Image (cartoon, rainbow, N blue to C red; front, side):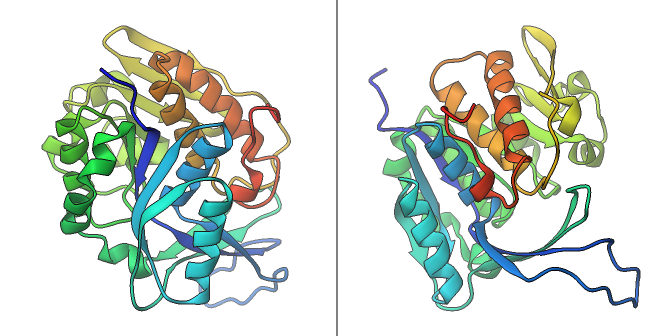
Length: 291
């Protein structure tokens, strides 16, 4: 097969992350004071694009952003990291927004308002078929409509690209989509949503391979060759926002470069660990020299 023009094509979400640090999260009906509001480019799709691009990948993005200032922010961030945004469609109305609180331990709570992300369609995917045909790996998440995710997975498979699905946020998906995943990437909560926290159990759902991320405990991967535990470097945690996206973006890039799943996950675990050492999502993602 001739070389593809892109290592990774991401079909997914772009958000503005509105972040406040708090001493503790409020209980129901309670008000707490937090830090000054910080606004960062984010969204699972955009984050994974930047993570792969910052490691030297050739990356393109398919999605929708609004006509507000947040749309300008996310476009410039992607462009600044060298991501091809020729298929980032401008949609009248607001860009997606993530409302994020971060506690002193660096753990976060997130509420997402989809905005333009909710308007990504199967027709958008069809119009971008040449983009999928140019990809080694196509990365998907669940912050755009499920019909668009399934259409992207089908198109990627038809064009010979490897499909990676990060089932986040957790959602019910058809068996057809699971059968296209190589790998399915989930954290422990998302695996529990699927009904089995064992990677071998998830393989029985029809996926070709599985990665379960476990935060500071690294990850476990499973495919036809067996199950492998992947440790994570131990680091001081500042902010976990975007760490899973950093992991997945790095994983996709290394798979595009021909690594086996366990080898790709080892590099991805280092990238995810590096990302929690700084505040923010994309602002925390490392380059190869940082590693």
